[in-house]
Image 1 (cartoon, protein in one colour):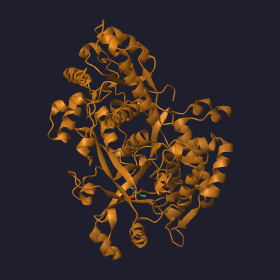
Image 2 (cartoon, protein in one colour):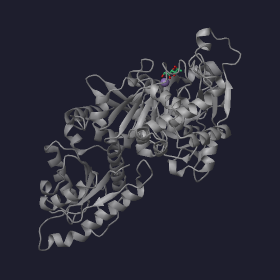
Image 3 (cartoon, helix red, strand yellow):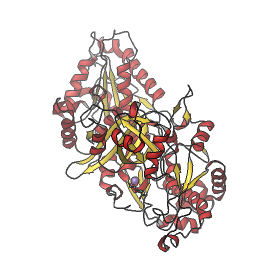
Image 4 (spheres, helix red, strand yellow):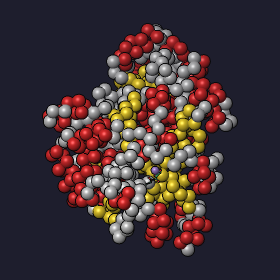
Length: 595
Ligand SMILES: C[C@H](O)[C@@H](O)[C@@H](O)C(=O)CO
Ligand SMILES: [Mn+2]
């Protein structure tokens, strides 16, 4: 990253000199420094670097002080400001009025000198001006000499910062769209205006022939290619070949132009090349390809694959699975949001998840709702535990991140999925050991290739999401928190093999009870598309905060109202039907980067 997006911290103060201001200087600055410590210790950029804060050089008692701080922040790529104060200050005279930053105000909840009153005054001013700001004050009154940050305040500050830093990291980065429409999936017919106006991103279009050009002209690092091939030989074991013994018609046999024993050479090269197209590679400059070495400033992308590519060339499953994982042949790496079937809206969903968690996002079809009755009919057995109300089969041709095996272990030795920097050598080997690579089903993929095949082998909290675009409404987000399920082995086998035994499976049970979550069937029935992106952890509240920053209304979620944190201006649209409020507020405010 050229210059990290930062959080600017603004200590505001009662400007009355001759006693009041002087008495508050230390406490106010202290709050700012405490907030900086909290943020820098808890939030990381995509590459694992701790998020950086810039604390203003002075307290702000009026716009003259504020203007010095605007200047300090302007050269630092400050994307969001957190104004902190233990006292009453003068609302519009001290507020952050820069329209380019995302804002929050933390008003100390004390009674001696009321920070929470300033907070309320500032929020009313922001609302009156049509500006968004997040309101933070503690649930319990603190004494004026208590410099701790209560847990509820910490949670709000961190949720705000995670969202704001995600917004900052997306801004002016590129989504690389490799190929075009895949099998009529509308999400693959990229909507550039969405990326530009809502995410502040740039869309680049790259034809899939670029991959063939780089193969033919050998525009890749040969040493790395050798290394990757050796790694594949050692760790990527082959699974079943379901084509064996089958008679295929000529249109299928003559379409396989890469010999079967050359598939790995092809797909490993393809993975290197696609990564380089997105992110660049200094090595290419050394071999005379300076333009290619630069990459395209990507933060995410997707590959069409089906069908103009896969109808005669090996599929993109290996590339997609490896790009999305927290490791490759070079060891640990930051996971990428990289969409299969060029479903750009699922790619953007993956991007939100990776940005908020630093973990791998798992791309899949939301393929089948298995009712308890159907499972019993087909297997003779009952679903149990978290699966007992029915399950969703999350499965796509083998493009899911290998972290989805849940083979990594936490400090207690339990299965989990991790931030990439916490992945160990053993975790990587374990994820690879629980994955086998099955030769692609030639009926679907005439050109062959290999699909990652595994099952998510632990009961873990996950969040499944989907970005949709609805004509007349714009982009909307759906969020389902739930658990991955481990089924009885025989039940798993019977259900899994009904779909495709060469693909990775995650069994998912959403948490029921919220509107739209009356049953597992309802969740599947309300889902906006054929795909979803899941990530480890229950991060629905963080997604809601991020969506509110981007003005993307959330149309379906199972997050309790006490976890929902949106800008204070949303309260001005009512408090009864939070979903309707979200719609109305997002529509009134308009896209963050509306041209
Ligand atoms: C191989 C098949 O075409 C699958 O890729 C297809 O069923 C899908 O994943 C549709 O989303
Ligand atoms: Mn699919």
